[in-house]
Length: 542
Image 1 (cartoon, rainbow, N blue to C red):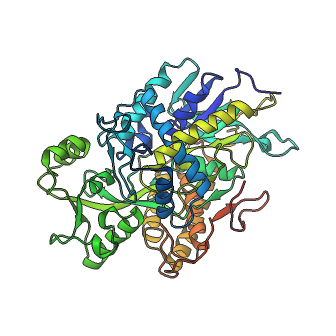
Image 2: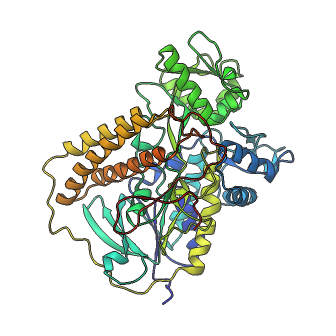
Image 3: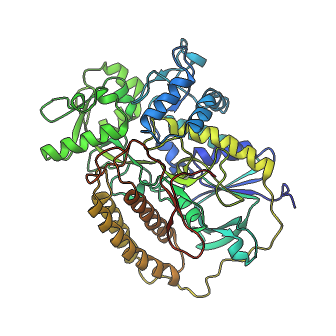
């Protein structure tokens, strides 16, 4: 039976990916969007640099695809990169139509100022000063709040997907909805859906140091994996080279656009070091810059390096980087006069749930968009500002596919059963395991890896999993418990993927396998029914 207007699409996540899907769907069917914290805490709002648009006369689709492939270190799916690049101008135009206040330039294409970031051959980054993500997110939120067919639920967190297994049906697996925790009431509700869209972002909070908000706990990846979906390329965690190093501000990103405009990375004595690591110096792709900083910090015993923009015009810095200027100034750092202390930090998850370019996962009825996915676009390393573009382009195609194909039999879904659990008597187990997991991932599964470190990490992760699973089985769920459960799931996926890759490529660097193989494939993990782990052959076609 074809779904009707009364069957909502449930979107888990209220960042750019989720809101894009919602806005493209809402004219045809009702939509429910779940945000596990306040809607302003999505990772989108933290994005500073901008969004790619192939707009200028000096630019081309071929150039953008080539830059994406170069950054992705041989693992980019060219068809995916081309598909998304070809729709970049249309994506920018759609955002402008939604009211996004991009920085203007009367002489620029579409009247927009374009900047340049590492890995890009030309200026092709549309931006709103240095707070692009916030500007985009606020504009789309305003549109969502106005739309009568979109219900936005704050402080609701998906617990797990409802699949054929829950209905005890003898049928091919499919997704029928989600169990979701109303955090304020402390109650899990059953949400039936014509389709479910996972737009939950990445897994940066699995690391001790990250530029991500607290929402980045890999919820969608973990739920999809538990439901039987494949995941791909989880070993490729992008560490942003320049996160502010300050005791009062551990997650503030210093946008790559600052280096794009001429800022230099330096040692304490004022020496530039990037030219010795790569001919592109500060404009090299992020994996190269992050490893260079990591190398110099370990070589010289440093807690951080310096990003120096003091040679740039003070007025230009204040106009183009007002957020960075104000935040640093509030901490006693005047970026027009003083260099900025920076360190690498976990920033972006280049792998995730395997999907096609219509957002389809392995489970009918389940879609995924954005940082929680593996589409082939990013390969072994994401090119700067491709992430927001992917959300807009594939958010639209996902909505179109749902509208054309979403079907679901009307079925009564089983309620959440908590008859065998009780309220937890203490929360110290969650806090302790959270801290231990993030520290061991930072120390053993960071920018530079070894097989021994990865094996140690896997052993400890399995012990932590046992403790967490026991806790989950005996106590009522809370947001902290659910996030910890998802983080340990994703940590194991990252480590197992890293152990499978016997080379160094892109964001994955192993001292035991320092060479890059002449031919390589995506790392795809599969979880067949009845078995805990099974590694599929290379390749990821749906």
